[in-house]
Figure 1 (cartoon, rainbow, N blue to C red):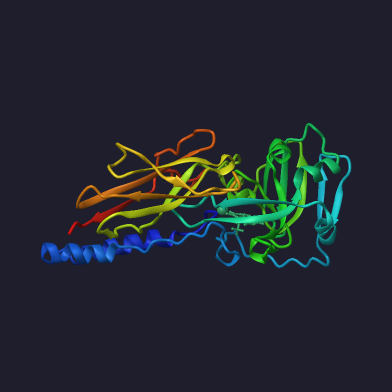
Figure 2: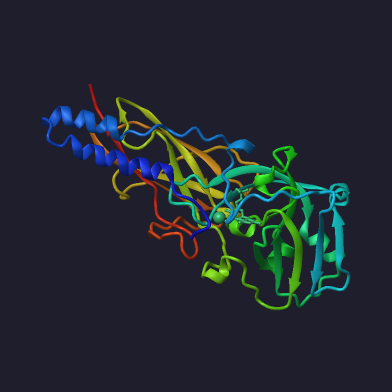
Length: 335
Ligand SMILES: Nc1nc2c(c(=O)[nH]1)N[C@H]1C(S)=C(S)[C@@H](COP(=O)(O)O)O[C@H]1N2
Ligand SMILES: [Mo]
């Protein structure tokens, strides 16, 4: 069990490599051409804001059907004035809107369990102040209608722009993304962005949520990552070509993205698109003039707004998220 899914592209890559072996008995040149054709994967066209229908979707059981006529959010625990808020009451409160990229902790290097949206909702800090949160609270625990729970520290809840969203990209929050209300926590993996919220509980101890009880991280801060979206792996270029992709730094934005075409000896700076939110991924581009024919390993690495550069250490998802550099092979033929 893990909080995410299988990367379809990783599967395709292995399948294509397998097919490559099948033609290994063919004459060298024909074999090479065939292998390249079998291996080549299409580029990804990644929109800056992910349309709701294309947003990645993960939950441990199934999407929950919540009836807002009977639904209410309760805020209780280590505080002096417990709150019970109905849907219309939440909609009437002062709203905040932020662009925040969500990423599943189970996302593979260059995986697709990452998407970007503009969320609208209410400030968690304001609600906790209204509820008379006691200053010695330790954790804020989010409970979902599916009996899922996860928490963040009281400090994060009060100081890191955490909010409860009821709109996604200008539309009512879709059922699979947590209707009627979900937590949006900039800077931490998807696990802590609890959907179908029913209760927020303030506790004076360190609480372990659904995945933490199975050994997953309780901190959950997002590791700096980057991905090459175009050209796809194993494509053949015949002249200048533009590489592009995404980079994500969690809470602190992205300051730089670099590409290497020689196995990490030299790095070239990519151009970054302007990004209105430090909690959002960044789209980058790099125009490459190949020095000659051959097979090139192309690697990408990003640096966040604090100047911390992405690690090349290869980590699997358990217990605190994947790491490693996305590297693809690009073939160059000169005529
Ligand atoms: N109630 C509830 N919230 C949940 C989960 C869940 O299983 N139940 N899964 C979490 C995980 S692991 C992720 S990655 C995100 C995914 O949010 P999305 O489906 O809107 O992309 O929801 C989080 N919130
Ligand atoms: Mo996740």
